Image (cartoon, rainbow, N blue to C red):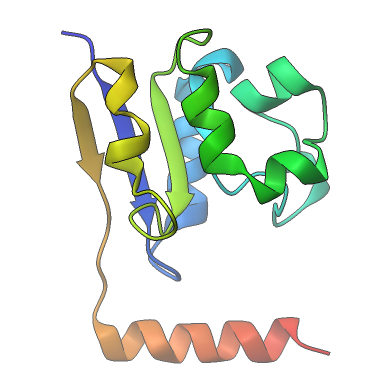
Length: 130
């Protein structure tokens, strides 16, 4: 059947690997990267529905209004997959944003031992902070 795959990434729990896997398996016109505009590197900038519709890279307006952009374009796009961090936070949770699509959601996330996750995040921040 038809559904929208949603992957809500928790920091330091294999999100980058999952994102790469999803991008290999979904065409740009079917993939919404909720984090796009703040990619880890330039190679990842501009992949996904928003880039197909808006051009690459997404505008500052898009980055500031991702949820509203997605909700307002649901009737125009063939959405099959959403990836991002904190999809249940913000003004409107992702399930409410996608309710207009009329498709069920298949939701996934990964969890990790909390102590190991915090240690990993600590070293990541130390490595990436000036």
